[in-house]
Length: 69
Image (tube, rainbow, N blue to C red; front, top):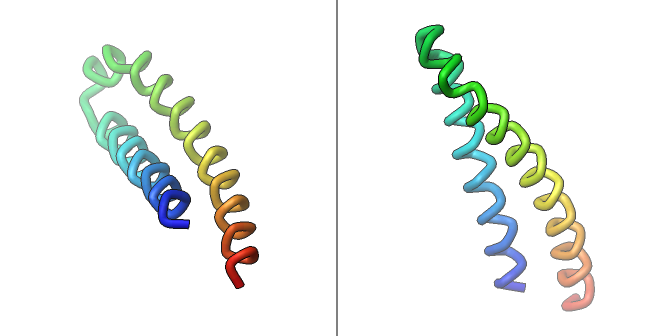
């Protein structure tokens, strides 16, 4: 149970970091945004993936909690 809760938290930390990084990049001057466009694209892909993996982990966490009831 604890390991699954930590897994969900790990995904949330990454989701928050990637979201904040994308927000920071979006506020940069045009040239810097252009220079970082590939990185921003990677972050967007990672963000999407982390959100999906977190949803999966939440399902398994719910199942574990049910089993412990």
